[in-house]
Length: 205
Ligand code: GAR
Image (cartoon, rainbow, N blue to C red; front, top):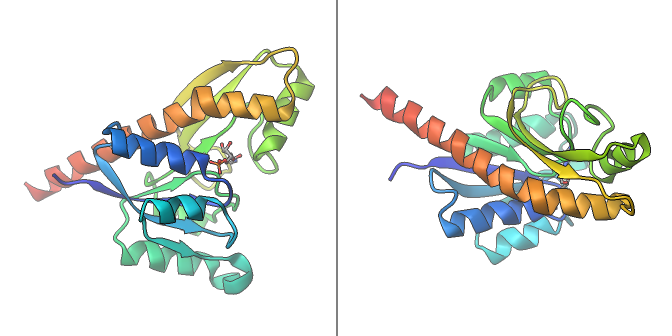
């Protein structure tokens, strides 16, 4: 069966990568296959997850490639003929040239209900700190297409999560991951992969 070739881009712990791997193993993610993991951090724990599941990986660090960072990413992605790029805790903003090169082929998971607490400077725990200091009673996660505006691309899926009185940024982050991110990211990746396959089949006819 034809499957979309997926590359997952990571920078840290990789729990969202793990959710995608688990979804693939359970058959929830069936229209796409994770064929590559790329990390922009040599010491990202996400790489251990890739190794454990025998997924090929590459380390592409900005400090090594400088101005050529995105060019290197593009050449690695093209070499593997990647159909879909998933940003799963990838902490580097991609340029307009890059996002246009892969229009509607990059998705990102963000730990809030966009358009709240998103854009430049809102990443990881900072998002949950901002939600708590604002005092929202509901937050959540969003999966969206990536364009030249940070967290500004078309929304694919969202899920709301309650904020509890005693929450710290860490407890809130853990609940948002468990109740929202690890569910909607695999579901959205399956949806987009399925659409890519349908397009490819259509092109073949
Ligand atoms: C996740 O909460 C993800 O939504 C967030 O970083 C964390 C990565 O965790 N991403 C952003 O804030 C992007 N703006 P993980 O490495 O365990 O998947």
